[in-house]
Image (cartoon, rainbow, N blue to C red; front, side):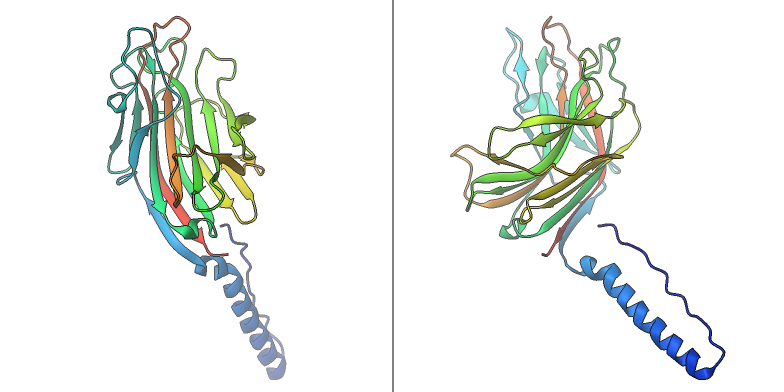
Length: 277
């Protein structure tokens, strides 16, 4: 979390007694500052992070479509490559007439996930520019979020997530959305506009399940009401598990079913702090 910085200045007095008092007061303020500046840091119970997503899992998400005559979307249509300084998420790597959804995530099973406040972030970018003239590479979305599944108690999936819409033929091209849900199926709510480009962008999420609060920030676009809770199917497990996710969905080939474009997204420098309450 961001810390408020304070400068402690020693004021020189004319007399020895005044000088001593000032020094004493300055020392007390310095101690107070140290406590204030590092208290929350000292409450960190877990810290995770890295340059890339090495050790994360990759699965097919639910944002999928296969044109008539195409085989169903499978793990053979998605891939995540962990390079030294970043990870490259890819969807529709076989360039079929499909929409493929790559979810790459880190999962931690730990009951403390419900009581800790979570602070996560990573940096992302498009290595190409989606456009109506780009038939080789094109996109539907780039997404990410943090979720905590409470299978042991409420059977709700708590969290916060964003979606950047990148289909250049769609009227919402470049719009940014946050996931909104209150123990229901949920929906995406528009929160701003992030110009599609190849620059690096930064995600930060702060999630406090006990307080039912979440703050989502993508660059300078912020949503302070991003806390969500979703009821999941009965076949979900009974554990308490937290998931930090990065996602891309390749472009939807409908209505003409002619697009065979690859979608790629680069992600790096992720962190995940668990703060005791």
